Length: 186
Image (cartoon, rainbow, N blue to C red):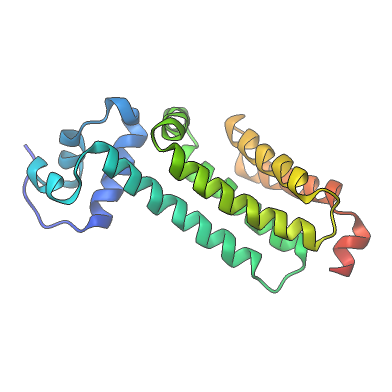
């Protein structure tokens, strides 16, 4: 039985992420989340109308965090290759930390269906950063190159490449797309 405690929204969102990560969206219940965070189900419903609203709040918080990390990296003082690396690794780190195991890969797929608008909004913001950096590096067709980079990041995560190897692949991909003279000059 869940005990009724005062829990802030971050505590609820942390608990919800944990339960969604273990059970997936469909199998997660508001009861399971309430039990995980130690509040009653009515207390949970006072904060969130339903499971979908709670899932969107969990997703928005996670995606806002990775967006802030990527935007900070894009605005950094380093050269364009290093900033691009940091922006791409922000997404890679997010995917690894949230969807690094098999159960969470299923949640990632479910999340894309359940919260499609949220995922599309985040993807567009992230893509815009990558396009801007590639344009700054004078890469021909920066939009197409951005799509290649972002698809590669998802592929690295889905293929269970460890983070160190994935980061090395990101570096290799950057060096293939951005020529040495571009890296030195920018």
